[in-house]
Amino acid sequence: MSLGENIKAVTFDVGGTLIEPWLSVGHVYSKVAARHGFNIPPELLNERFAAAWKAKQNFGHSMRDWSDLVDATFGKLILKPPSQTFFPELYEEFAVQRSWKVFDDVMPCLAELQQRKVRLAVISNWDERLRPLLENLNLSQFFETIVVSIEVGAPKPSATIFNVAAGKLQLNPNEILHIGDSPREDVDGARGAGFGARLIARGKRAIENEQISSLLELVN
Image (cartoon, rainbow, N blue to C red; front, side, top):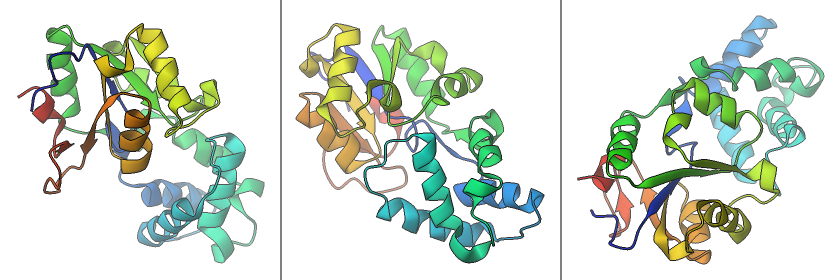
């Protein structure tokens, strides 16, 4: 799948596109909770996190937003909510390299695009932890610019965050291709801002021409 003749830059989402929690969100939550005497299975926390994430509204990726989400995940599993106990420790746990895994197709894809002189950038719904995390994961070296929702005050799918990225790259939106794992935030958001878009859905059969199952499809 070619990028298209007019594409001069590719922007990437981060979570679910470049990296994933390791071993999972539930495993990280369970590990931190265990330090405080709570033995809660990771599988249960994964289920509860998925439900809390689906139910969230107006999530701005602030520390308060994350605190409320973690409280909703643990619910009545513990006497005091994490916001009153170990939430700060949990928040910092997701800022470190050991809590994340870079997908296997990421480095080869970025290196090849860089070799081909394609300009690369990040557009991510994240917070102040993202820049140092990408540095520690050896990913920031590939990106000309990193646009973070908490810094611009507008998360995807808002056109604002895509417009900021286009401005930093000094390119027209139709010269940029965005890659992400969310149909709404990444695909609809990018297209709404005039970008091209590809949906990354690893391990799933393509249901449309612009869905890819590996980032390597961008360079093959």
